[in-house]
Image (cartoon, rainbow, N blue to C red; front, side, top):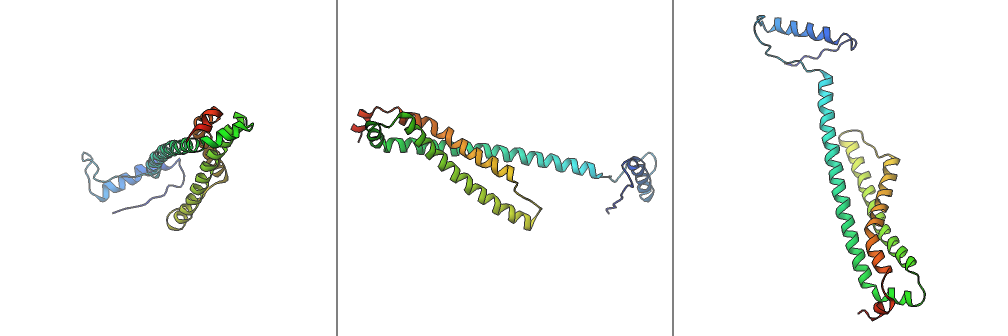
Length: 182
């Protein structure tokens, strides 16, 4: 049997809990020496438990997101290393006609950041669709502009960081060696 009782104010909560406990003991015919064979659940206890669960969910979400960003960054770094290797002759030609290492570095960083930005935008699209589904089926949910902005900035940052080492490697290639590369 469940009984719901609402206190008129927070101040009255302690007294009301005592009264409910006494009434339940009378209803269940418990002697003063007997332990309670019922429980009283207060909303703040349930809210605390819910907040603890949500804290764990947020922590797990942060962990999964961090791992995903790291793995994605490593993947983009590998793609950029392959790109630098495949375009070694192109880099050699560019350098032989006067391209500065700085411009080659920026080209590869831009490509890397663009790849990650595209991935971030796809992620935002998927998150928006999932939010709409959750909103219709379960709980009210929304995606805020500051979170979207942070997602775009993080995506670009991961792209720049992941492309930095391959871009530096490509910008430091010796044009003569690069032109001989097959």
